[in-house]
Image (cartoon, rainbow, N blue to C red):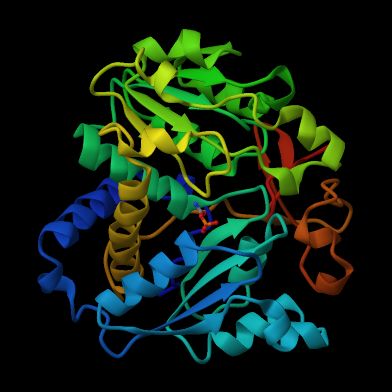
Length: 359
Ligand code: CP
């Protein structure tokens, strides 16, 4: 049977996602039931980019399931420093481990790695593209804290252009009835057009605003994000955006008593420290809940049989096309061996690795 990879949460059906959320709840309630679920199994965590939560929560998740972990958190301490390409690293590591969790700075790297892995591979972030287990963390948190995934008014604030967690959360929550979105950002950092297309297609109400104080009163959920310095073309561009949106107690006083504040973390300055003691601040609990979501995901991916199979679009191989996204893995000369895979959707052609539309 073909093993399963988690490249994006969109490839999970609603049933599979809900199965994972339910299992996360059971694990949180009765961790003893799952404490031997992965005995004898090894997870490799390959982090080509810095991480605290994703890396450590995967490692902790595997250990709490009775499994063991190997890996690196600095590729310069591995043979990547000697010029080893992604294909070779993955082919070798998948001979050592039963499951791989990988973060890589290049868009489409997770899909590329999955082609050479003989074990399930989990995308822990591929550049500005996808970060599915953060979205899993977010929906598990919404379920724990609000008891539902529908009929929520969700405000998302900050770097809505570069925040992959924002895009992924909007996509997932747009599948649930009655959700509406307030997109709070400067005009330079609004969500990309494809996200607005998704919202329109799903008939979700949304508005774009540039003032957090005016928007906060009606929200059920406020999802704050960091301005992503590392994704800006220059320090000057970053300086213009940083510090524009700060959640402090003055603004929080205007919010509903049962609104919850989420943040994928790390925080820089967008939530004042004083907010941490407010019962609506859920971002540290959110990081813990992510571990239960990841435990459930590992168990489900490692099950040899079952209905937990992600359907990916069949790629078409084309030597005529070239991905025009400069950040795509196929444009990294070291990964020259990657097949030229694209897929068609509504007569438009997209790169199979980074999902960039090909003109
Ligand atoms: N939220 C998140 O991905 O955090 P890390 O970068 O610390 O893993």
